[in-house]
Structures are given as C-alpha cells and as structure tokens.
Image (cartoon, rainbow, N blue to C red; front, top):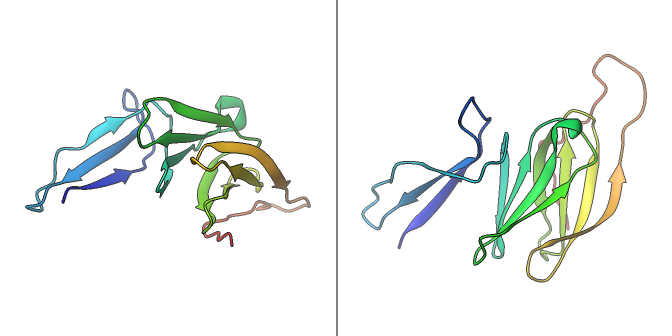
Length: 144
C-alpha cells in the first residue's frame, strides 16, 4: 500500500507550496513534489474529505485557510481575520474546524459541510490587554 506524507513549510524565493512524498510498498520514498502555490503553508491537517492548509502570513498579505478535496482539483480559499495562522484543529465529528493566529492571538471557528468544505465562521475569540508579549500561542487545540 502506498502512503502519502504532506510536509508544511515556510516559503523561500521561488519555492511556494507544501511538499508531498510518496512511500511505496517497498518503503522507498519518492522525491518531494511541490503542491499548490500557497505562501508559507506551515500547518496542514488531513481528514477523510481532504487536506486543510493555512497560509501563515499577515492578514494584509492574504492569511487564509484552504481546503483541497481528495477527488477535486479545485481548492477552496477562506480569508482569515487575523495575522499568522499557525494551527488547525478538526472536530472528531468532522463538523467544525478551528484556526489559531500566532500574530494577533485570535482564534476562529468555522463550520464544516458534510463533504468537508469550509462553511461560515461560527465564532472569533480575541485576546485584549497590555504587555510586551500579548498574543495567544495556540500550539495545541482540541475540539469536541
């Protein structure tokens, strides 16, 4: 059985997107192939419906959440309301997806449609206050 590994990464000049490595039944890995032209696709999450990816950039530069279904070539893009999205969590029921923003400390929650497409935003939580290092750093989220 062949396995696919998707690797999120920060973009470099002339190299956008995330990489895919295929492992054959003999355990030999293919050379990485670049998928999409997403800038700074640093975090990826996979479900039975497809692959979710964030573009870890500032909102003004196009911070977004992407969805690529397994059987479609089209990619859905949802603009995000925060800087530097850095983490994705999908609920066990596959009906919600959350995105945390490293840059602004925001947390967004979206509905997921039955086929995995990203639906409307359900909630946005923001941190407010004062201090030198005021931002949320959500590296681990879980949605029940």
